[in-house]
Image (tube, rainbow, N blue to C red; front, side, top):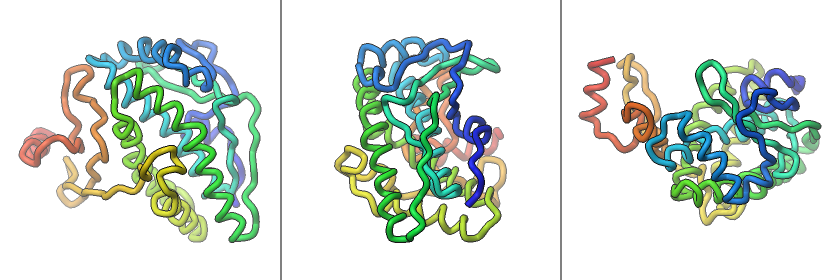
Length: 260
């Protein structure tokens, strides 16, 4: 088991015990379950990303919420520990730095729970950690975010598999021990294939999706994943589509490769 690293989770997953002194918006996660308060956040954030519609702010905020989610996944698999993240102990803050709006997820006092040493007990603990986070913490936030921005909930949840597939590969590459590499893969398999929809407060598991690969935009020998759901980037700024957007045709991607 590797050592816990506060700086690492702050830099990599935007989780911190220290509030931002320059926050544009700061509110307890519990209060953001109220549509009135969530709308305050959305109305502040949308102009910062040049969103033409609130739906784009919704997918972008959802994408930011993948950060603490990935943090939990990393802690569990690599450190064999979980940080307790709840609606009541987390404050979500929006700040502007390096010409970019960013979020930080603030928990003033970390409560860290170690995994059981028994393999059977760890398997139970793992599912309990996932359920507590995704069903009790994340689901209420995404439900309210969907109501406020007009997005289908499936589109907001759909931002997660894309990020998780990419970063799970990155986690495997980051660690050196083969046993931890296997643990990362095994734990992600549990998340995708061994939890039912009700563990997320949904009818189906949002991580149980297929993956489509396409030619990399700049390297014809490499492959990249198509996004699981559109992030609505085309509803911001100059209204362009991502190369990996599931909504565009292969002919459009071919033109992007030529121009790259």
